[in-house]
Length: 415
Image (cartoon, rainbow, N blue to C red; front, side, top):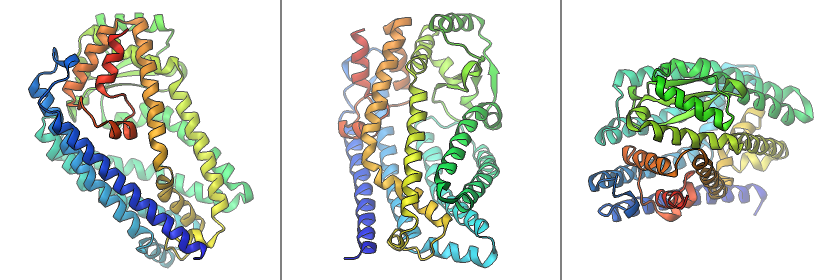
């Protein structure tokens, strides 16, 4: 068996194995939620009523079923792109209309991204207007959904086209160390996006107003002072425009960090519970979880681009994936298409590390706010977001970035 066929079989094996694994785990998650839908775990009975628990089980089941469909569609689409010949077809069209190799590459990569978004769009519509609508979470109108879609498309075109062009120019013109220069460029781009997103892109989709609740604002500022955290301001986002789900997050760097609360979160939690949620988020900064994650991603991209440099000169890399032409754009596209398959079984280790970070952030929050407040805020969020309290253990270990609800609350009870 030659190298090309061996690589084809490895690709097919990983594609089928990862797809079947995702389907299997979703089936387990669905079964676990439905099997436990009639009994509320003891630590949650005070706040979560039986009807809320059953709603969470049915919501989890509905999401698991649509996810299964999504996994099948993604797997089939990746096969069609590669061994099915779609990349060859798009590349041939690009060759007919453009003489410049970089422009041909930009058209090819952007076309694949565009087709992928079209294929995923129906699932997004189902999740929003069927599943979330049925369970009372959706606040989107069709006109708002389409408006968001147009805005997202324009923002993507404005940002992604130049990035793809520059990436291919670096690939083609900067010699043997193209991969290092490309890594530097992408690293700078990602950091820049983290800085400008809250200031210029997020306001395109949502309104951000300074927090008006003076009493709560004073309490938050006192907590920030205790934690030694400097902020550029406290803002409230109109999350209720699209969904009833609640959340809070940080954006920005250094002294320019902003704290953003969904208006839905402020409506659902008491002031003390809001402080506990904020203290948890501050715990991530105190432990440098965000910085460590960024560094990890930079290291991963560095290794990935170096590995691509080793692959790009091998015929089997292209022919093994059913692609006839060997261009820089195709090498880059193929690498990013198949990388998730080779990293698929690394996900449980990344999820485990993320759950460890959540426990650390919880422990930090309990140093500055009562554990009872964090416990009750989390239970309310589980209830109001219809998050299952009884996830399948294997599914949770594989995917979940946050600890299972029961384990997390038990850890807080001991604080």
